[in-house]
Amino acid sequence: MDTINEPATPDFTKLNGLVPAIIQDNTTLKVLMLGFMNEEAWRKTEESGRVTFFSRSRNRLWTKGEESGHFLEVVEILTDCDNDTLLIKVNPAGPVCHTGADTCWDEPNEESDLLFLEYLQDLVDERKKEMPEGSYTTTLFRAGTRRIAQKVGEEAVETILGAVSGDDANFLYEGADLLYHLIVLLSQKGYRIEDLAAELKKRHR
Image (cartoon, rainbow, N blue to C red; front, side, top):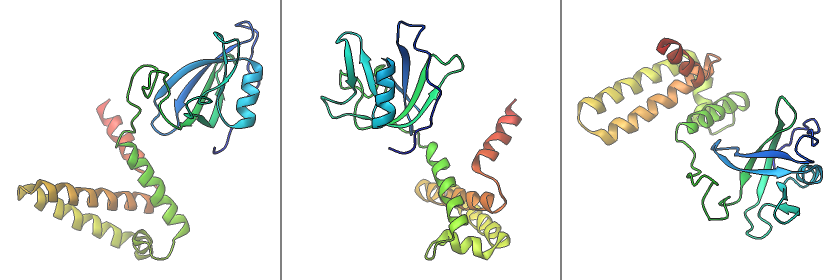
């Protein structure tokens, strides 16, 4: 478990002592399932770090995964604007649905490859802050803006050559190098890959 925010106590009076709890994968952002909690289940979830529901069919508390081992490890608990619905971000230990599916809507719980760009940006920003020895990214930051920009230019040329040569494998390889060095340059200038996405989104509008 990571850290759990301390939300306000939910209003359990509206649904005869229950509140809906929406379960979301903290990494993929997929909605995994919907359950219900009474106050005892909510408090046990906070204390244990594993999602516990109130089972209406069994009329008792039910910790998700107590039989299958597929626990839902809590990362964050949020309460909605009316204080009567919970959003719980989790790291699931396996499939969530009783059918064996990843989600109760039978959707694959897979992380989009695009999310890796955010992870890479976070990692580059961390390198800039900590400057660990032996890291290629550290050497780029120490070389400064001009050198990083030069590397972006070099990788752009390599990407172009890969494209026009008909070598798609090399084109993708060099394109990945170009994107990595661009992310380093963004970090050096105090920006992130999301800032480029925002600029493109603005142009689209």
